[in-house]
Length: 46
Image (cartoon, rainbow, N blue to C red; front, side, top):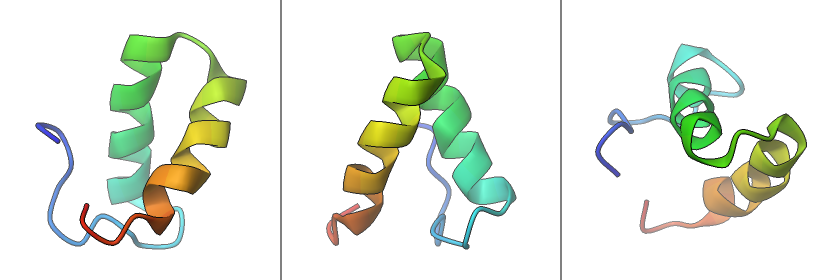
């Protein structure tokens, strides 16, 4: 939540990459980031 910019859902653009990068810093696993990112992207409240 601290890293995500407004309107970050931009079809794999720079804003989504910023969110994925923040997730990777925590998870340290690219496959896990991709798996979780698909779930996060579908959440309307974020």
